[in-house]
Image (cartoon, rainbow, N blue to C red; front, side, top):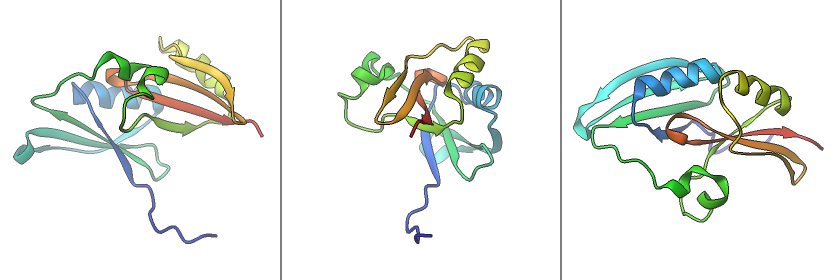
Length: 138
């Protein structure tokens, strides 16, 4: 096994309402709240959630939050804007996941489609954050 110098720890997502975002990740993706606190020196609240697989999502709500531009809500137009694009999750059966998301009232933003030997689809998370789901088709 290769020595991993930089182990992925978490990704940070700015949200408009931290309680709603935590509830969404818990209800839809099965994440669990690890801790939540105020970070008053910078004017925001933060929550760490995880799915038990060693990767966390840091959600933070700033008092002066601003929504992103509309082009950030779709993978095609978002790819034209520099910066972080999405979070990707590996799944065993993408079609089953998409059927599950449909029961939650969530439709794909893009896909499903085959791309580079991967079967991929995107959905919106809280505040229309792009989430990608990938099934390996090799």
